[in-house]
Image 1 (cartoon, rainbow, N blue to C red):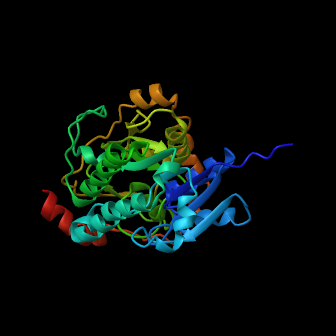
Image 2 (image 1 turned 90 degrees about the vertical axis):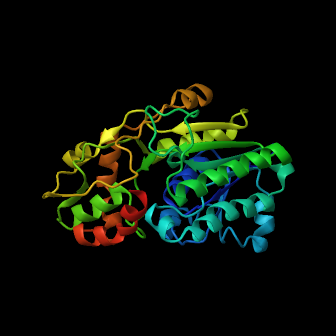
Image 3 (image 1 turned 60 degrees about the vertical axis):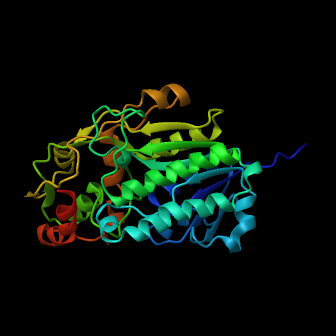
Length: 333
């Protein structure tokens, strides 16, 4: 009886929200998964359930310092690159950090790989590259990054495709719209609506609603995101960019209705934010035979069943939000 060696995939940002779910997906597909994370934004709790899984190996490492884990990386045939720093406001406050981690960190990762062994490198890009886009937004939309985070993510995407052009690295990129789900980040900067609302909900505090709450976001549940990245790895297609969302935007007001909070407080609408994000997903559904499986209502229900995860998240209110977003209003108006 012959033994078939497992394929090896490297997941950067392994302890992160999307990274940890993508690890779960690849393990179910019988891959050996190697993860790296510096735990500056990821949460070790996200991957604690994998401690005894012999097909998962983890190294604590920074993208800018990969020398000590050269062999760990070079034995991989597939790479899914999530690692980096996110959020809008901190990128305005400290752009250098974003370009070092998201751009130079990506260069360092690419430079560490043994290119000839790589069957596919999939980059986790951001729909923020489009700015305040016309909707539904397709992959040919004009690029218009409005803040350093968006620009750093787009620059790193272009670097990946440059490696494809010069070094023949097989590359695909997925521009994520609004991923949500269990294990989403509970620390760090003010930003994603779910993290803010869930902590307020646990504390029986009113929800801080930006503007009138009519703004819509193209929310996609994280297991659907993970499946898309898996399919972008195993496809024969190369040099592709795909937009990734549900294709069915939901309003913040609808989310509030489902959450049923004790009350709401309206805070000023923020400059630079679109009134709607809406991914045209026709390309990814056609190319990868992928489609969303988890409805918005079911996704929110899954989160509420795990709401204790957010009990130690920052508790935001009108005053500390105003202080935190001061530079947002200053530079993006």
